[in-house]
Image (tube, rainbow, N blue to C red; front, side, top):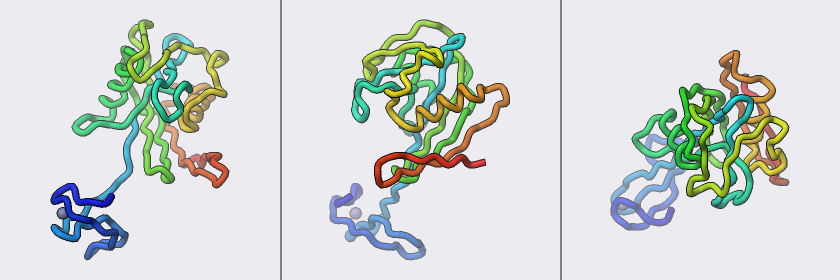
Amino acid sequence: MNYCSQCGQAVSLRVPAGDNRERFVCDACDIVHYQNPNNVAGAILTWEDKVLLCKRAIEPCYGLWTLPAGFMENNESVHQAAARESIEEANAEPGHLSLFGVFSMPYISQVYLMFYGELLSEKISAGIESLDVGLFTQDQIPWDEMAFPVVKHCLELFFEHGVDSGKVHQARFNRLPNREVEIFTEL
Ligand SMILES: [Zn+2]
């Protein structure tokens, strides 16, 4: 950031008194502009043996498939965020949502909180951020057209383990110099 959102003057990157890392600090009003990770909430929603996927109508990854997910809004719970994204992107009707996995992406300062739930209705349709939506069995999933590594990983875990144990999966993602992503499972 270049300018203070409080007073409009220039900010500089320095370690505030009593802190231990650089922050953007306003040179005029001294306010510290903290920047922290963003939470993304999403859901694996099933109908019988099928999973709901959305084909992205927005960048990044336009035209690739994803689970309904998006940045949390202020003043909502993470469950509400996952349900809202499911409605916005697929006009889906999610039932009870339970936590399926927590995935950290320190290289982009994002945390994904992914839920599992059953659809209350088979009726789905593309929302404004989706080109298309569909219900896919494991064999039908376009595995080579997944938008994000975290989405692919989430689906792989789901089909490998199911949800019977109620286990919450935990992993950390790291991006390598060649843009590949490596995944560390946190036990
Ligand atoms: Zn200021």
